[in-house]
Image (cartoon, rainbow, N blue to C red; front, side, top):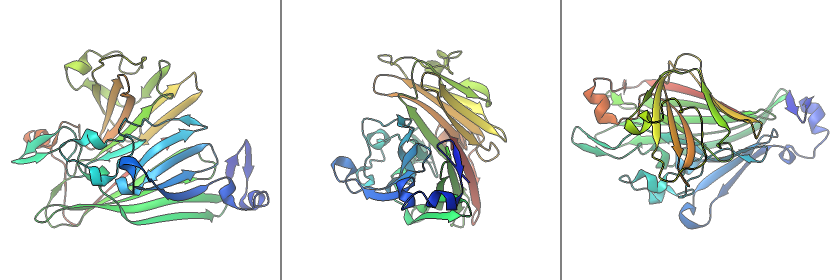
Length: 333
């Protein structure tokens, strides 16, 4: 049953009160029409709980703008939404929208590097690859109204990898949550690198001086000297700081891992829940700069040091031929 406005409603009770369920919840397809976003397909979803978010099938089935009860939750960078036609593999940041979710991968992510003579840009291609077989489902399942969008994104090249990501993003009427279910299939016939990072980006007003991070992930490690300067303050936010240099921290995840940003002044918290047996690392991206004012909580298959470093360490994750890897994330509001 749907919990709406402090009351539980069955399907029958609710439908007596509306002409169409779209009065309260549903999904609407649209397309951006101006600027670098022009031509980008999108789907806006609202679920009646105050949760509203935009899925971007043309951007790897990622999630852009997101709000809860009228409060902006996601960070949107100064690039805004960028059509993948403008993607420059050598300059990932030119089309880094941010949004609630930017997927990094599939065969490489993290720092730019040269791996076995092949130059690789930052964070991979998948977030700038349009999806196909995009399907929108809105229907009652007994007394639950389900809103679900799914699609496939393929990362492939002649004489190289052939990976297909099948993503399903779902929510229910009255539910304060977004569910992401990914299946990554190696359709090729050789072992293929699989490096995935879920770049979840949170911004103002969720991120402010009164925001704190709580997590049960363990063994916090600074990535570099800049991050080392922030040790002991990695879980608190500040006002924007001129010239702030990003700080990145790595933590180890386990079976039931969560990370939660809470802002007492808003009475709002947003949590990320995932399985550390699927995604063994939680990366925190703390960027308290002017305009670049964002906290990233990023479940990952490997620390984002680049594919070359993973190979050098003998730790490069590989997906066997004709096998599928599954990842699940739950985002709660």
